[in-house]
Length: 367
Image 1 (cartoon, one colour):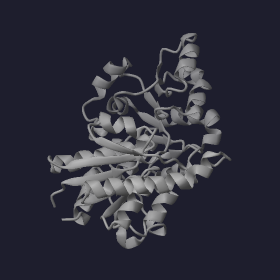
Image 2 (cartoon, one colour):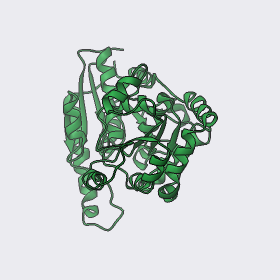
Image 3 (cartoon, one colour):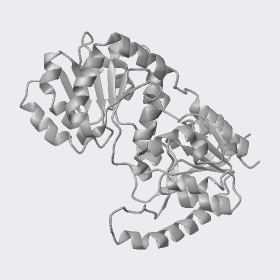
Image 4 (cartoon, helix red, strand yellow):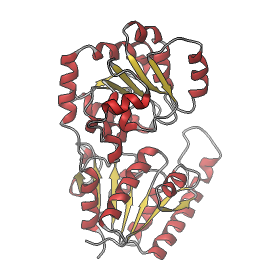
């Protein structure tokens, strides 16, 4: 079915924004003349990232409920009503054939307004444990694309299609790039290499884990590509300059994720939904350290979807500072364990997820 006008709503984090852009890119590839408008939350990162990817975005003045006592919680009902009216106005003016929600504050009012106007709607749920907004919207939307088994506990089973999460092809296309990767990051291709990724902002526990075991990495001659995040880079870099650790490459942000994946022998990562989906396509031995600071503890649930199938190892955040790096170094030298992890994680990859999601969008769109 030909798509001419599409709205995609959501954001707040890269875990929502980048899948949304991947979906938009696939729609555009199939329908070069399509008009796609994003609806995001004013002040959130989608307002910058979406235009940078070449798409138009409208902003709603919407925020989430704060767990701590704050005056902004009193304003929340008014902001929701205001956002609903603005979303309704955007939809009535643009007349989309379909509205897609990817999670994040803006997707709630946008999809709610779309269902009230009778516009076909689809949710793309990235996590193994959905947030409250998607659980509420599920009763009214037409279709739900999921990345994990067992979501019929939360959503109507007849609306669910298991597609996997959309990931950016350039992130996971690593074949034949190993030597290029070592050259790019100025690392030694003869050494076993550990990749530590804590997200663009960084992860304090992962950073403290490596700081606590500098000497162990040197002693075992393990090479480390360590992405520490923008919040921590200045202080860690200052500390790092005063020490002699030639085996460790500290970076604030990884600008070539494909090359970082390509050079790694073992990967340490948080368990955000999109990271987990990428790791299943990368097919490398992986240790997941779920962040405890997320709603509904969904990162632990994402991680367990792999760990329960023996496709990854789990180290709890509470014990990571002591045990994470020793666990990773043990894994680096255990060829049997690495081979088993690679075998099981390979079974979970869904390389055609984006195409399957757009197939579902085309099925429900208004003619």
